[in-house]
Length: 302
Image (cartoon, rainbow, N blue to C red; front, side):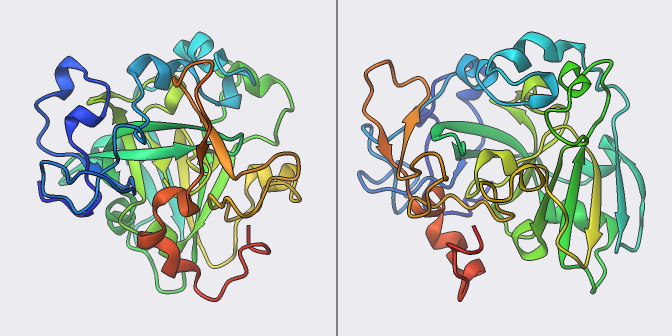
């Protein structure tokens, strides 16, 4: 598989997994300086800068409010979720609306392996090796119409299995959205696995969005609906508190959350006394995505 980004990592840069060592290729959006990787990539992170995370860290520490608000609640309770016969409704401004099975969505697509930074709005971070497909390839299956400007997403609502939905923590279903050009960017993917294994329930099985230059809550999990629209769609955290959570939610160390700084972050797995790391603009993907926001005031469109 050809590398599509110059900042490519090798398998050694991520915590080893037996099944992970012989993978065909790794695609990374991690930006930094240091030794040139064995792949011939222009840049790779130095050992000091890398943030390797284990399967256990990735799957045992995360947010998925549908199962509770604690960091370990998803891992504790998500086993109740039944993902058999999963379908995604694609509607709105598309030529071929309908209910798509996972097989229909992924037919003809080749699974890609990408190592991406993951930055939570709560100022913690990981590096995660995702498996999946570019979102634009899935949207093309439905035939996006010329009038579409945004893509809206919804998570499953099933309180009998998703215990967090029994409480009004948010206005369920969980909703997210992207501008169409963001959705079509080649870094934007629909992930179906981690470390070459199927996506764990607590991380958004069977399919979730991954947008690595945005805060993690934009990467909506367990998606059951995708709508193409000509209007900016409502999004859950913006609906809950527009002052703190904007529609765009790009990682920006220069724009603080009203209650804490975004200039640095804690690395999950770095140890109790690990030094905080400086947060990079667009989470390190500035070269790839900054042009999407040319002329925009990012303190206003946050």
